[in-house]
Amino acid sequence: MSTDPIQEAGGHHLVKVLKFGGTSVGSAEALGRLVGIVAAESKMARPLLVVSALSGVTDLLHALEKESEPKRQQVLMRKLARRHLALSGEVLDHDRHAEYLNRLSDRIENLRDVVRRGPSALRSHAIWASGEWMSAPLVALLLQQHGLNAEWVDARKLIHVVKSASGSWVVDRNQTRAQAERWFHHLPADKLPVITGFLGADDDGRVVTLGRGGSDYSASLIAEAVGASKFDRWTDVDGLYTADPRKNEQAGRFLYLLLEDATTWNEANQLGMHAHAFEPVLHACIPVHVRSTRQPQGDGTLILPAHLPKRVEKDARELMDRSNAAM
Ligand code: ASP
Ligand code: MG
Image (cartoon, rainbow, N blue to C red):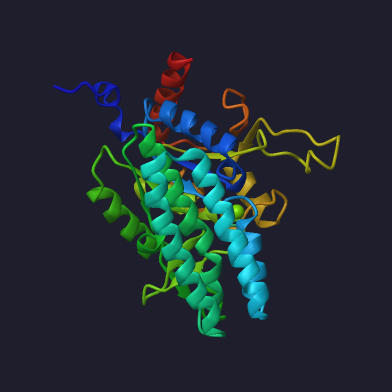
């Protein structure tokens, strides 16, 4: 007999992708809020997490990639190590911190090799991807510490990237769907995966990154592949605005958006997200909810497809009922 409330509610078909951006994993307070949100969400549905690098880390890695002076490379790598060391020391208990430090020092060692190697195919991608390789294990260990059965997942095995005719890297959507679907099918139902955003792999398994802000695209691709009922994009702003609310007092928040409109506007670079972020969820008619970790009860911005297929509508209602009941 099951004592799992989700199973009892017959809710295991309700899969939610929760994506946490850099500011939502970048400090001890933010990580504390993340734990609370994930614990609450896992009572209502089966969450899959996608995480960015800690805030500022991808910028630092870009600077490192461009830097050719060995001394300055060392300074940047030390800064990177110290940032992760300090944050993990703040949030993890003794044993988990030791485990994380092992992983971190391997990662830094690896990065040092790549940086030293000098120009080579995909060198820059291997450098940029390091941020997510360092954040996902940290988040997974922290969730374990709070009693959740988390494990970090390297998105190289989920997201497949190929060279287009024009020479740029693009996600192979069909192959990605097939790979991620197969992975999910074999994932034990009680596992809470913490997936690295922003990256995938080419035919040879070499890491390729998806462009700045790419973690939203990762989350959207995964939501499509696993047939998620909802994609929650957690950030530190309470939704999408008509303009940057920090710079423009007149900026108004969108309460609702049509997914079709959001996709078009975003492609025209009006929403400031990764250009392809909405394509997979639009294709699969999956609602997106942009929410703030600082106000988890707030409305945020709800982005709905114009036509909800029956299954999606039923799931959306069920999710709403459960979160109303939980409040
Ligand atoms: N860390 C990457 C970036 O800052 C990907 C992301 O956060 O979406 O662009
Ligand atoms: Mg980032």
